[in-house]
Image (cartoon, rainbow, N blue to C red; front, side, top):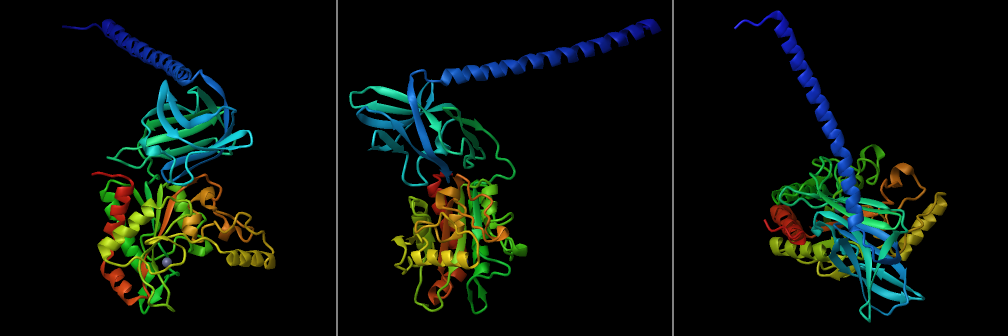
Length: 442
Ligand SMILES: [Zn+2]
């Protein structure tokens, strides 16, 4: 068959026309789709709105510590209350949390938990969009809903759940006027976001405790690297603050809190847990021995006691013989003492810089716990020296659930043997504790 030049040209024009029309149609089609999605979103917003809201309650404090959202606030009510709940509402009460409450003057003060690592366990909220409401049931069984007015500086927070079977949810908590909304979607963990940060103490110019030619910094690093592997075998994404003999916080005078420092690494990776690995040192009292896990005052101590008991079980080291600051076997809380605070005050005055206003006898002594927890654990800045003292994240209301693990005393001969010979057992013990705490079943 022979095709004329004229037919060939017409054919080509027809094909070009078909392509142009197709492109236009596709563009038109996708233009039409976008507004539809927006309309749907609005529809959903109105769908979840509970029209029975009768008033407004105020949130005066809100934060995420570790894997829990916690809040407290107040509401004006004259009714005789039988229960107060926080409700995640999506067409119905999808999830309820009982609140503690007390009457003060004509107000009712409420809070989720007085433990900082308790409250709403974010990882268990199912995908969806929820309006957060306060539900008050009176003694005569009348139910009233209150919307929430966020009085704090934190009207938006986001959070990635712990990796489970390679999957994560992304949670956004936002308040616009008096509408508090929690939105949970599935989202792959971004490259720079991690579940846990491990911090091998000291390194480089700071060897930590030294006994003969044995450096604490080496022992810490070896255990931490093994622990990283163990946790990764559970499917967790783990950041480590150093992988060699250097001090990530002290390069060219940078403080551990500043950019590139241990504390900043914890915040920047949005980690949920911060595990600092150390070995203890008390040369004047070589009889002192055993494991000590330090954590913050209002922590529920669950993970701390799991780490302590698992280490004792796996390594056969003792619970520490130290009585001071002891909360339970192997679990300790060390806060600043009055005399330490007075010393800080004197130093500030002598050197003419502003004293840290927020320090008191409930402030954590160990910076790896205090500074990684943000406002919740009393992270602070002073006027001394921007490079040294400025924690970039001191005013964050999203804090890491932080633990300082003192594995044993380098200055006790029996402990030292265990520290040198049972590094694998330390890593396995801490892994087992984390596994139980996170309820990982695989
Ligand atoms: Zn140390």
